[in-house]
Image (cartoon, rainbow, N blue to C red):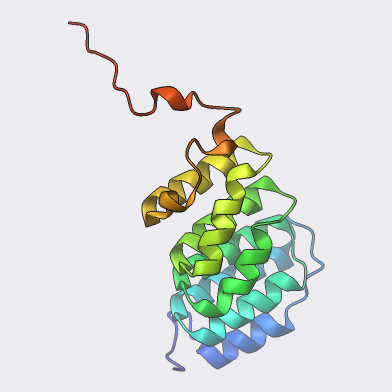
Length: 169
């Protein structure tokens, strides 16, 4: 599966580039931009090698912007080779990266990732909890969640969720 990319790279070249890439660039640096471009190209490749390379890169420690791009790419690839990394990012300290991980987990859709999404229902960040509930609703995973969603007790009035207000002309 060494199909050429639009920009002239094949999977083997891209994998080597990602594996050799420096990861200590500041979030706005040129190296970070190159990493994002390489990650995006790996997502287009739709290969297991691309998913493994992106996973290794994310585990090596990259700026948040690069991590977000990597998680998005793993979601596009939806390959099981990215599941372990996505699961780790579901616990990341940054809410924005947890949200990207939820989207990727939804796309990969393994049982452990669905359980990881369910665990985010008790996240300290309201937007992460909301994304987790939405993701679970998409996969039908809400049946596994205790009635009332303990995560939303702080934010939503669960008692009105099944009632529709009457329309007044």
